[in-house]
Image (cartoon, rainbow, N blue to C red; front, top):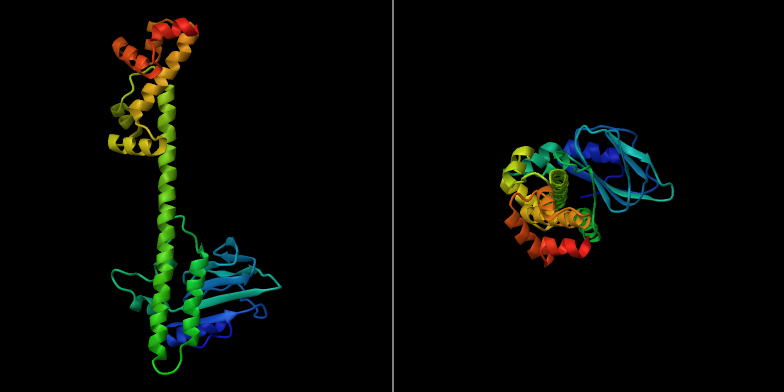
Length: 286
């Protein structure tokens, strides 16, 4: 496939041919002003360029950045490096991409999926950059008999590659988002426990208070703290008990203030954790 001489030509050719077209552009090519068109667009920065605007969102451009732009999204290079501005621009007819997709593989997903914090931009690793440029080179070098079939095959590989890279980043974004949610929930649980240390805290009570299942609470708490809720509560109560005993509280007063509703349980837990009984600890540290 022969590369187009400009961005406008890629749009025109891909819509006329009802397929796709690309251009390899340099600093002497004037970037298009703010524009909207009926095709998907891939913008890949080889070097140069400073800032990209997509639907009123500004993105600082780095070498190896790739922008996946949906149809009807307004976009343009708002700032350009005057020294060098090398990039690959590809326009894709949405209907063509739809025809190539299957029920199991939606090749347009990287352009249309925006349900997470996944932005329009991906930064490709060095290996991914080399892979992307490999496909572009294959497209530009294919000619002669079967050129149309080779172009189609390489284009399919390219779109599968980009969607896999996109999906991997979506998964990371979703996991990060879930982790942030879990951390916020665990922070709230910890604050509640610390504020209600004197009460008879239980997993059922926490589940009811936070409207979360007990199994879910156990899972996120263990993942965030490395211990179970019961062990954490016991450890906090022992720590508080040691502090109170050192301040002159009696053993019974410390037991009650720390939320132990049974003296024998308090004695057993304290002795196991500290190595001596509460009474001896008070004698040594008061």
